[in-house]
Length: 209
Image 1 (cartoon, helix red, strand yellow):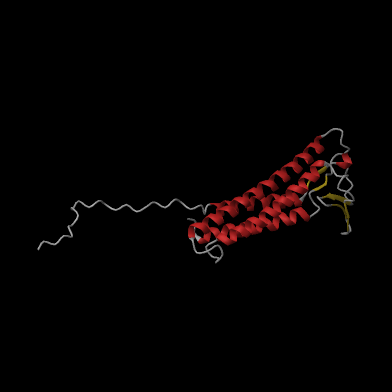
Image 2: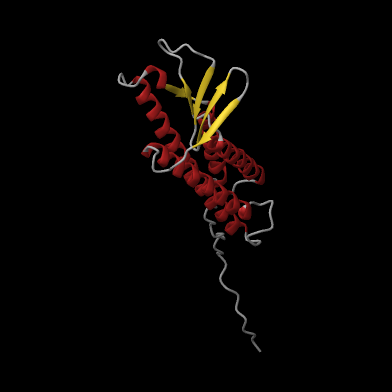
């Protein structure tokens, strides 16, 4: 079974991954305006996230506007929203389950095999949550690339990758590493002890008078 240090490291990495997923989901810098062609005006930088769009001025002021209606958003943005929320919820659930199965906690009883299976289950949930976020980030990234190289997209509306999407990527990979370490707690089957056969005949308990 995995040792206590490996479980603690996996839990810490997964917790850092959860923080990265939350920050990546909330921040509006999922994509930023690209300065290509004749679009060389740098006084205002445009950012778009999952929940709002922002305009950052060279004076240091930022104005943000929350999206008015969900129905007005394109399908890729709505799917990315849903997958990131599912990823965060699964990560929270995975951390809760894993904490009950870790050797350094008193939850889950005293059975070491049972606790290791609980920790393994938590690790699997964390990996599933990380995969959801990877799919969301990949989907959003693919849409940015397609719009950027689309010849019919106006130059002043082309975007490139923002900082938030890289934070979400990092959080997802931290969750995968942490979940993998916790999933390594899978207990091995215990082999029954084998004793050498005795060559001596069984002793007789009869007493002769």
